[in-house]
Length: 440
Image 1 (cartoon, rainbow, N blue to C red):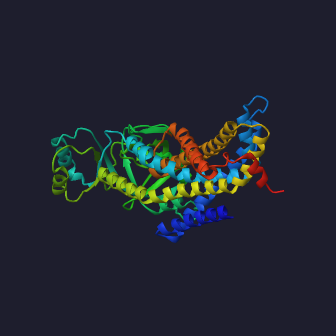
Image 2 (image 1 turned 90 degrees about the horizontal axis):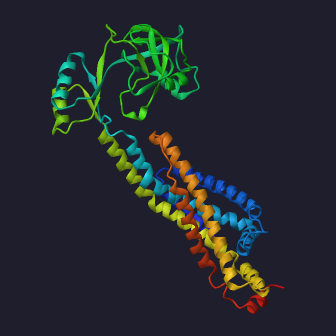
């Protein structure tokens, strides 16, 4: 009963702390639900592992200590599931924290090419192009992206007017409710790949569409699109689909016209380049071209990094408490079986088992529980890390191979320590005393 009280207190304390550190009660409840879902998943997987454990160990050939250890785990499936799932939940928080601090954020930084532009300047007027390019050359900027930018709204597809009223996809609705940044270029941008159709330079009737946009809006090769550009209609046929690397830190467009010029349309220009090591460059640019907008991406990335660091520091204590709660639950579960284990060990010693054999059985059981918890936690942390990389940071992340091994080692050591503390002295009891204390 005391062990169950410790268990209940630990879980209640964790839930209370999670709600307390959440600024929004709704977010706190979502976090509690997320941990509860993870705990349920760990419980299911650990139960399956316990069921398969006896079958996986060949009793005819396996060492005696391994057979006895697997029997100990399988004899108390509920306690084994509780220990594994509780410790796995705590280790999940720990492994995820380590991944965030040591690998995921660093990989995100490395995913950006070393020569990627860190300045994006928009709203450059046509009569400023020569002077702007001259400034870049004067300060040593030799490589830069330069594209015309035209604002236009998609108003018809294959002659049929379009709007967001009949669409269930929220992103598609938003795209149709705003203007696109259109551009034109006789050459396919180097960081774009053809995903369908053909790129035909100077094809006046052609339009190239980013494949993701085409999928969202249900567009296909051959469709005719009409754009409203400052009151002027511009129509064309989709002749190619492009795969765009949005993480390339280059200028990209949803819609490109494969022509060198589009006269008669209102146009501004966008430039992307790596800032030169010239003191006061940004200030000089702003003074000479006060109408342009200069976006310093490096400063934005630095701010994102600082915010992430603050978030990680803020949840460190919470993650540590999660791990402590898992250890408390494991300790409580082990303590709850202390007397039953003492009777079993006493009976086995009376039948001839040595103390060293039983000690090895005990260590193997605890190490197995911890290693399984560490493996489950590591795999879950890698899944969360992949999801963050895919949808939050938007880059391809290569999961480090050391995570499952490190998670299993950490889980095994923590389980061994907590289990030893809960079972200390059990193997040292005199056999006669243990058997006399057994219930009739």
